[in-house]
Image 1 (spheres, rainbow, N blue to C red):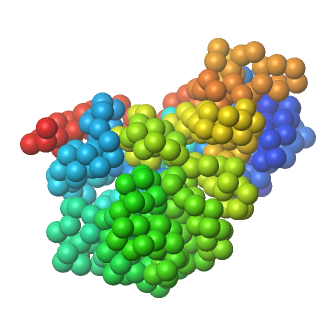
Image 2 (cartoon, rainbow, N blue to C red; image 1 turned 180 degrees about the vertical axis):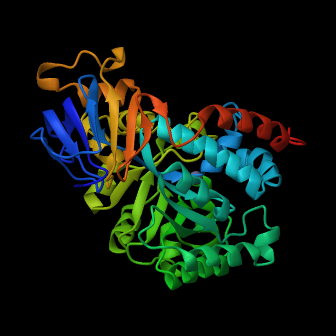
Length: 419
Ligand SMILES: [Zn+2]
């Protein structure tokens, strides 16, 4: 018997190829599913009459601790001003304790929204990983090798020592693993970029970087090096095959897309962030698809998202911006956006079909994905590796109420001295 196996009766299940099934299902702890005969020995049987079961959402670009800066914080600023006037000054107040409070709030929000994985980039990864583990979530936590503030512990080499310790001691099959983050070409020197690469190479870990997010970044890079950011990264030999995750990739030429394909880099589409910070453009999915690049979806940090970690909203925004930018109503369908937003998931989310937003269900339940993506729904259950993090509409792996209180008190201290 699979100890974590659960039976859902009379439910609707959408599988990895987006095929709709109706009936009784066994969900196994390793992520497999099959139809139930009704006599299997299972951990639990759940009445699934009001449930749509899908793969859970996967968020490929986050700064989870930035729940501390979420919502109305620094609204109305362009990226450059937003970083210099608001984000970097508050990050001077950041410490592991503050970071863990922000990550707890982020983890609670992920669970509430049916998302089981975050590819995170932030300071103090030693404070982030344990919170995700305790919450039962999956994550790749990338710590900074950067010249980006706060730089005290970066300058002394302390941040690198702490990150190396995590990389050296991680268990490869753990749900939470560690990686290396180089913030961007505009905040990292060539030496810093390459020292991040060497560290990732040494421990066979992923590398996470913001690339070509704004025209200013691209123009400045061209002025300094005579190359576009991805050309520059290629020239300095930054890429490790199949290990680099590039967030944004908005202002990118076709030859750079081919470079990304050659290095098997993933690109993460963050449309809300690009629009909220008025970047004037976001990635062109059609061109990336033509180049054969693996594109995922990410919310970015809450403060630059609009204004949270809701991957259903992000998938919807991806659809709207791709269609709008390309004057093509078929540029990204709801089914394809859902596939992108759940790609690689081994976990399950069950959505409430009694939610008015999920009605009507259509002939043969054919409207579920459109309802979910365009209109949102309540996540009733989230199951990761055979464990319920949320069940019957209640988060069970974390105490959401105490997290809310802790976040509110922490934010008053965090903003101290910042306009
Ligand atoms: Zn980011």
